[in-house]
Image (cartoon, rainbow over all chains, first blue to last red; front, side, top):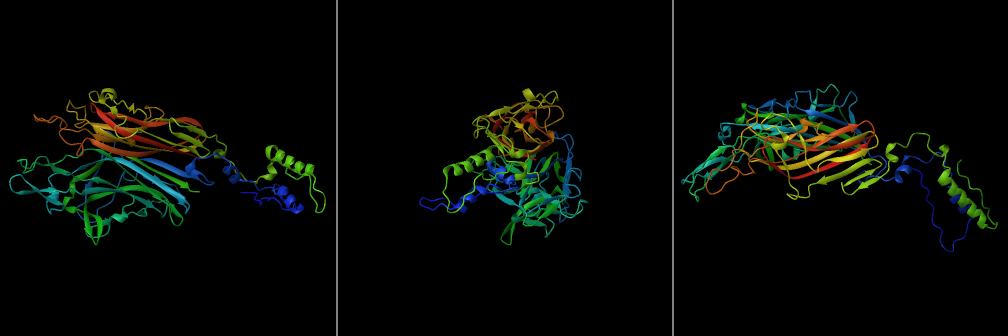
Length: 293
Length: 233
């Protein structure tokens, strides 16, 4: 960018021929005016004001192979052993593929990712009652107590990327996100959950159990139904990073826990099995790569 | 032609007002009419985003600049302008027909002037049902679906739809109170959000908004918000 910057002429200052000439010849700058001169004089949106705010890449894909009205669904069984096997939504057909050269996210760039889908958790028979993880002792209205689970259990949908090659054979969680593949049972602390969406796995309640009101308990495992879920993530890397693809994977069922002064989600295999599952229909996965000024 | 001052000043000679004015006049002419190609860098440095006329639309909350569009709309706050979605007009409850209907106020129409990337952000919250009437065909549970559309509801992005289930089990049979059998904190309430990404290959008038499809007889759309980001490529 070419700018003409001159000291002001103050009252009482001598008129110098050389200075005066310079004030005019400063406008003689062949080949100096560029993009920045035009941008600085343009009217732009306040959030992108600058000389290099541009969208470099953008891509969207439907996420999942089901249909929105639940006529066909994808089914993810819950894990019976640790760690849980990662289930890719869409089975590899609905991931974002950035081509042979990938997207190179520079230090001045930002990668923004958005996803959503619809999910229905199916858990029956109170499998969480043994080993009683999350038990709450509730007045049964008859002088005793009964177990009402805290239901702090969930499925996890998290974002993964491949930074190795366009072969897309080396998936890892994005920075800030863990993959729930370590520990016994496997877990992730809450400080490694930057790119995940959770789906509550089950919910039970007692509609009437209350001694004061003189009613007995009526523990009910709610039949969970379909509902939309969504998530988002952004990356502003500290060094240039080439990404060849993005995908969303599912694991579960996890339960809230505390260990080593850290809140975390840890795998709850007692609830595992093919009949305790998560169903998915369809959604979308989008990414946009922008350069920040 | 490039600017060259018509008058040059020399030390120890009288400074003539006409000479100074002559230089200023020449500069004025140059800056207004005579910047030539030789004064510019010999690489392409002006693209579409630098020659777009700005625009500000306070009614729809949209503004346009050289880089694109931005703006947003919302319903005005919780329950301020409740709208509704119902199987009565989406026609699916009994017949199986699929008729998506625009959600009032959520549509944005903009004039896109160059190839662009569009990000449409949206969220909404719904109290669905209760509806204890006859079930629709092919489903044992009823839902209120919301999805983005582009242009018209003839182009609904159904894959991006998200649903809220009916507050099922019908009405309380108690004699003291009648109403939804389960509290909405359990079922029948949903707050969802999403982002729809699209691209255009050239100038066009572009409309994007939210539409709904319901198998529930009536659901209240309590609150919603939409935002749009458009950047020219």
